[in-house]
Length: 462
Ligand code: 4AD
Ligand code: MG
Image (cartoon, rainbow, N blue to C red):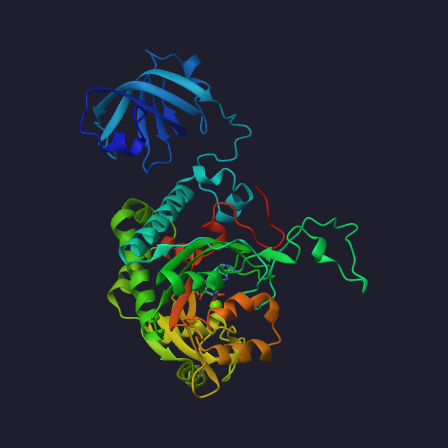
């Protein structure tokens, strides 16, 4: 490739050579004789210093080269005499691709708050922080595919438009082409979805799991990695209406194997970040979370604690802690409970298993006690639940009974139930919230700051 990225130029050993750099001006400073530009092209957190001799390139020509402008610089790459950078470019020629009026360009030199940057999410990839976050995001996506490829899992594409509610929570976004002002009606006066695009009521998926199971019961090991959607009105720093989920599903995996997979997978991703995103992590550590890199190492070096739900409730009740939501056997754990277990009691990640069946989805394998199911949540410091999964109910009779008991729409799930009639097999899987993983790996605290364009209740800009 002819064009060079700044990341490559900065690493170049070939000094005293001609070079062309292109990017956005972060800052301009200097005096009557010389100007210094800090140029960034998004390839790394570091800027390339451009030295402009004003005897060569006049002040007039330099005027439109302001913070935010996009330029091309042709010059010579030399060893830098100054501190802070190994090499710099002595400019011979500067071409301005696009100016950025200093009166109106919102990203001036001073640091901006994360809240302010959310309002200008269309520009924030140009900041150091979002450059780092988005590069780490890319690296994690790449590492996820690498991990599964190395471990015999096939990337399996599950549909985004679906007629089934995997989690049974009813928090789905409907997909329709019906005339909202004047929908067709049945004789009973209901909206007639038979006349809708798919001939039935459809929504955006909340999870690819059900179709993922079909893949696992044929290919052995599969994973999905795609967008999922939840129409729940949760305004928390960890919930988004649109997020990406990774869902491995494996035949012949029991709950124990599933836990092992989850721990090994998460550790692989964290190790990958430490090895491949060093500069960006150091930047995040310095700017946003002084404990970040230590915490990543800490998770790598400790076994995740395996804990029964029932034991967790005993620990919470014995803690003497006043929780906002008091909890008893049977309650769904809140983030405050999860974080108490992880951050204060065990001081390491926890895998919580064998939950009451009432608080978990219909597909989880039922235990012999008649009360609990083989569900598993992985709880992380600062986040709470990062993974949710289970061993699946493989017995047709038990699964069918549970679907009935919950009053679910059997007719929509016939294909799922059929897999338990023909060649059913023990199998397990889980879902990792990609954006929650990013919260953990970047040290930021809000999901809105790790997604390029977050969708949350009342927010769908850009
Ligand atoms: O626990 P959940 O709802 O599990 C499932 O959807 C299963 N079908 C997964 C499976 O077994 N294949 O979601 C899985 C993970 C959560 O642990 C969390 O990390 C993330 O997805 N998640 C969200 N992330 C951001 N915003 C939301 N609203 C999320 N809801 C779940
Ligand atoms: Mg869950």
